[in-house]
Image (cartoon, rainbow, N blue to C red; front, top):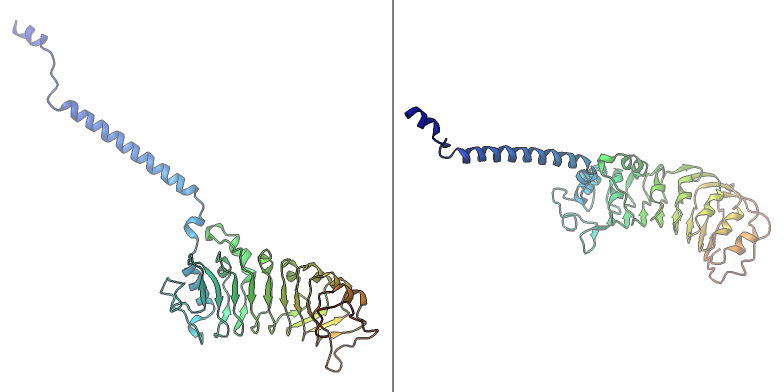
Length: 313
């Protein structure tokens, strides 16, 4: 009977077996969940825009600017780029920030800059004024804006508030690529540079310009009628070049024009009365040729009798 009784005894699971099995199951489930979560996170991160990772800070941009403009050779306002507080004038003289610590102005006039302007400077989101006159810069960086913007991994995004660029008295050879700034740019100062040949066609895309100064370069050829496309222009300076021919009547479409200077070129022929009569807001109209052999106007001089603001001819 003993064997039968033994057979009829209920099976008792050893103490702790149920807990061990449950714990094992829980660990397996937890490991599986962790693996799934990690895989999901990796998938999501691969879908995120690369600009989130690659976008440069203000300090990084200024460091690049400093290096490419040969900062260690500056004669004034040298920066300490190891310090990341770009709004601290002790470390970044010439840099002005707003109340949100965003750079709004850079003024390094006559500081011994040379070499190139990095196109990254045009990515500063709140920058409104860039003043770099009286230096030795030969490349303003405009021709590389499109190149950077076309590389997704760089995170380059053009700023939208830059209104004024002052590069008077440098060694700029070209304005190629400047049309990228057309939406915001209102003043462009390029007097005393090395721009040669016909009026650069890129300038005619700067539809919001109010002031354009390209005097004392080496500009040749006739006056391009596309200049009339700059309908917001208040001041246009083009003296001291090698421009030839007549002033086209299309310039009369610039109704807001107050200052027009083509002096010291090689202009010739008559000055149209219709042109002059349409420019009713003129304050200065300067087209004289002082030097012998540098062109000659002829015909009747317009009367300028409908110009209440005119102060100089």
